[in-house]
Length: 346
Image (cartoon, rainbow, N blue to C red; front, side):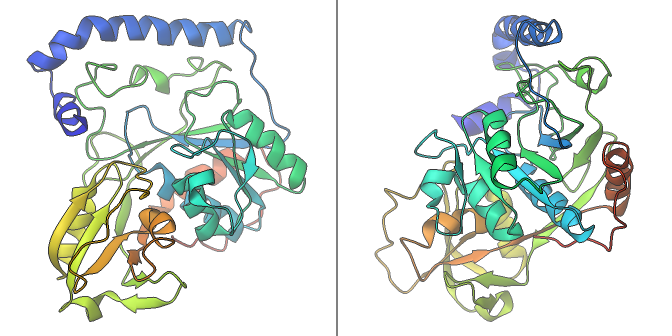
């Protein structure tokens, strides 16, 4: 069903047209909710430190989490203390908690667990991101910048910088849900004054190889190594003669499989799993001669069940101009901004 919807959202075909009247109603509700925040009939909280929201206006994954990791590492390289808040999509509870190294990904969500592991920054999750932000500042009062993983439409948390992330699909057929992939009208969201606090999207970052429209570019590739459960590394080229079963519980599993094959790896089988798959019911392959290989996002959950699995990190690099534009925006909200000494990648 998810694949069918993704195909439907790429063009204005018969299925999309059938759903278009529902999309019109959805658009009315989106604008009404936004107007209620603008009129202060719905409450929005301002944090005492700058809040950077990284999200998308399209349904499904587009590269938000790698962007969050790259931003946090960039801030850390600039000498700033950054923290991250998230809803923790797919987790087993909805309480507010800090994601620690010993926190189960089932309790925190896979993406917050990955962000914590990749950055070592404080990460808090809550059903309402504004609650997570308050808890973060209470526990870590020296935090200078909060980065919000997803949440462009979470207007209860005011933001200082908004970053919209797009992959190869761009805005799809340009229609709102369910006739198209858009959570809100695009490119209307770019305009100042459209957001609930008078804001608009500041930066557009493309994570795909071919940007669908204007914005900043980035590159993404697999690391030259895979990680074991204990954190040790295995060179990818050493796996060239190994029979592998590749798993991916992400928005677009085929992209991961394609990158593995481009490295010359022999994929005896590929298994596309639902995004945020929890692996609770995942069966161990009967043929023990195969090695399991997965994304780093899946690895944070799979390692506790399959200790011999391998997880391949993603190296994600926004172009330098993106970070320059981001620093210029942040400098107006956080003064003085320490000089940057470069950034690392996940």
